[in-house]
Image (tube, rainbow, N blue to C red; front, side, top):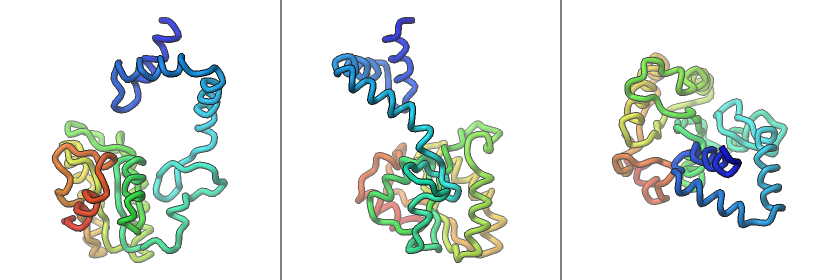
Length: 203
């Protein structure tokens, strides 16, 4: 396999990137000056050293020696709500909308419908631990914000079951985003108005 073919194959591993897009990326890089390719390679090589997961919400953040990200370190954020998302980019999209001021947790994926090992795919242990800690700080509602597809719906059911001993005991509401999200929708792609509707119509 040539170096060109290898890079194409690597790009194809990216979410949502098919053969054509991968080829487009590679030909773009070939057309750029060597300095650009060197800069990009250096940035990719260093990203693993600069970025780390927040010990509370689990999202990636960089440029800090702290163990908690800027959101979790913000005392002005509401302690009453916890929004659970599948991916970092989902959190980023909700945060960018400016419509939510509570806390977050990144589950790191969804559970495939046919899976018999949910803990293999998502951070269930960390979520349960966080919810237990947040109860002591005034947690009143957990909002599940997963994709509107079979895996997302399956994940919602699993998480409700996982947390029910804690939520039932402490009278914590567990809600899900309203169906402002169309079937199959990924939270990372929805616009601000759709996020607003989904939050307002959660149930």
